[in-house]
Image (cartoon, rainbow, N blue to C red):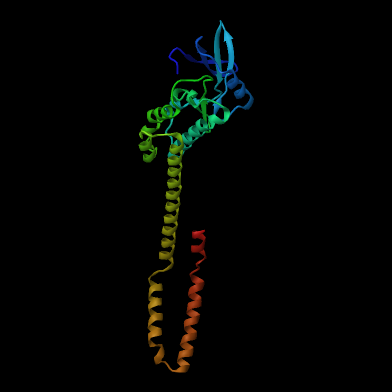
Length: 259
């Protein structure tokens, strides 16, 4: 980013805009501007070009977007939101080549990275070749913002300082973090269901039931000593008691918990 580039926020009746006044030495890639006007790639703010007082100006519509810097001052981002914004950033940068854009020409500074009300990323694209390297620009952005957030995954913080850092591998690490998060959430849900089932079983198996089970075991122990008629009557009684028990203790509720 050239130091002589002037950026300012302006408000008009039609809305908020970001105005860039370009010095004469900057030559705009007109084919890129035309492509942006025709296709409007997702996640990119498309500027209008004006010439005033022999100076080229670019006007970026901001609508109701909030800068990342302002958003972080006003609210705390959850882990899921941090991952979504980071992933959205990387996807926009990696897709730039599909539109013949320079990845290094995205202005990755938190004051000029914008978010919609749904936290979708909108990036400022400078339609000329800017000196620099997109991986380093992205590293600087995240190190200056998300590494200070408590919920930002530690594996991503560590990878940001790797000398071989690149966007594609960062995206892989990010999706690993998302997988681990989903896996932990599933584990927590499973543990909760187990606790619910244990609680239900404790309620349905009082001390009287334990005595009943012991009585059945004693009955089976003495069973061979009964004569045939006594055996039949006692066996019938045992069957009736077991049926009553099954009616009282319905396992349907447990199956509902496990659904």
